[in-house]
Length: 403
Image (cartoon, rainbow, N blue to C red; front, side, top):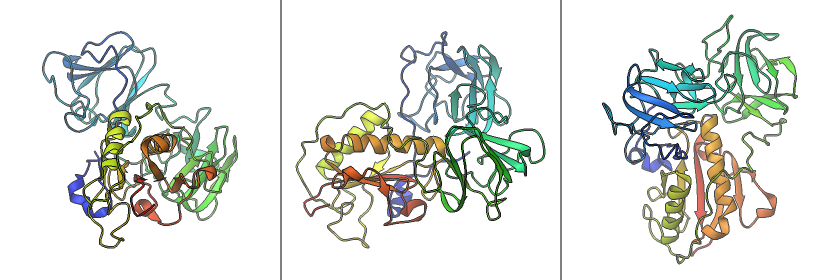
């Protein structure tokens, strides 16, 4: 299972490396009782020991207190973080629920039918990081369902299939963390990356397949409803796909215009100030606090002083934050993390005036107050996973030396 890397070990590399999902809305205040309408994880097999009850999907249970989701009921395991510690489940919902080995709904999985009780199978027992509520199609069931984009191991839509309903910026390189071919047939269990030969686009949007992770390099676009073989240069040389992308590099899914469900922050009345990194200015501290309290993203840092930049730059004066989204510095986010990053980026954009935010960079895009009428623009000042800001959201405040 992917493990998160402490920020202190990466202070010179722009940002921290921890991603923690936002706290979910309470299911009867998450009271440690498995009630009707909830999905419940148990510390011991056969629905024994302390229980942790949920009424929403969780993309990352969190690694440690006080931010992790813990077992809340009485009994063995009470207070222990759920992640990598669950042995059994009870699905008291009216929909199936899938438990995943990795955060971001990836890796080995097990689907529990509505109303079902089960012990987690080998490879998931005490190796669990996320669960998602919804239909088997949403749980990647190896069937090319309506509204999904599907990759096939062989040409002409033959062999094992890998089905998706979101964009994926990096399929991953090896098990158990890669996206694999899930359907029966030739190639089942093989990682999708550099192994797909054909596609079927059953979504209502165009989908573009890319040679490189992060939606870069040679690409091929498939219209809504289209079937096709990947062209030379992409057949068995594929790393990513983006839904809603007609080949121009835009229109990613999730919609970059979605600000997420986060509350409106109070006005930032802190004075303009220049300090020396890694200290944060008063304005920056205010924004960092609001991000943590209102969006749940708790891993935003100024970072160490950067000798290669001007002493008056936003980072060096304590007037910029990098908020890690992916599992580790230098890694592209999975689809759930990419969606989370867009929610944070668009919340910062929406409330830029109240927070005194000057510009935001995320996922190869930049938005600024000075050019707000242009919306999200392509970011060209850096490239690659970190330089292009695919693994972290950057937010700058005004500093006394200007933007």
